[in-house]
Length: 361
Image (tube, rainbow, N blue to C red):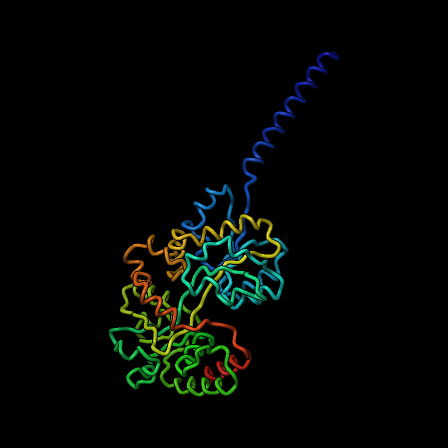
C-alpha cells in the first residue's frame, strides 16, 4: 500500500511539474513588451502599429484624446507609468515640462536631418536648452474657399474677406488661436502671439469689423465642414486637412496661403517621465518618423495632413502627394517660410476675452 501511495505521489508531483511548466512556457510566450500611447487619432492605426508590433514583438495599447487640454487632464490624473508616449500640440510641450511629466530626449537618437529644416531644431521643443519632443505632424491655417463662388485672386490676401460679395458667407471655427493669429498676420505681425496690448487692440478692432461678413461661428470642425459642404458658406480660415477632406468628397474647395502669411500648428511625440518602457517608446518615435510610416500618418484614416519628413512623399501616391501639396517642394518651402508658429499668447486671458466679445457682438 505504501509503495502504491509513493508511486501515486510521484505521479502527482510529475503532473504538477508538467502543468507548471506549461503555464510558465505559455506565460513567457505572451509576456511581450507593452507600449501605452495617449495620442491624437492616427498614431494607433494599423498601417502605423501592426508592423511595429511584429518587428519588436510587442503589444501597443492606446487611448485617443480630442484635444491637448484633455490630454493634460488625462496624464495628470493617471497613475504614474500608465502611458509611455504622448502626442501634444507644440505649445503643450512646455506645459508638460513644467508639470514634470515628460523626459528629455537625445536628439541624436532620431532622424532629424530627414525633416524639413524648420522642424530640425524647432524652438518650442527645446526648454531650458534641453530637447523634449520631435515634430510628427504639421499644418498651416490659410483661407479655404469654394471656387464655384469665390474668385481665387480674392483669397491671396486676407483683405478679400471684407469684400461685400462675401458678406455672410464666411464660417469661423470657434477657436481664438488660429483666427486671431491669422488676423495678426494680416496686420503685419510676424509673431502674432508675442504682441503687446496695443497690437492686441488692433487685432480686436479688425476682428470685430469682420463680424458682419461671418455667416456662422461653428462650434466644431464638423460644423465648419458641413457648412462648407452645403454651400451655406463659401470661405473659412482653415487648414489643409479640412480642404483635402472636402475635396475628397467632391466639393470644389481650395486653400490659399495669403501673402501676409498664415499660422502653423504642429504635433510632437514625447516620452513620459515615468514611462515603464522608455526604450520601446524611443523605438516607436523612431518608427513613426521613418519615411514610409510618415506617409501612412500623412494619409491616416482619421485625417490627411502634412508630415515633417521630406522623404515621406516617396511613399505617397501621386494623387495623395498632390492633394497634400507635398509634390512641390519649392512651393511647400515657400509656405514654411511664410507661416508663424502657433503659440500660447503672452496674455492668454486677454486674447480669450477678445474672442468672447467677438462671439457675443
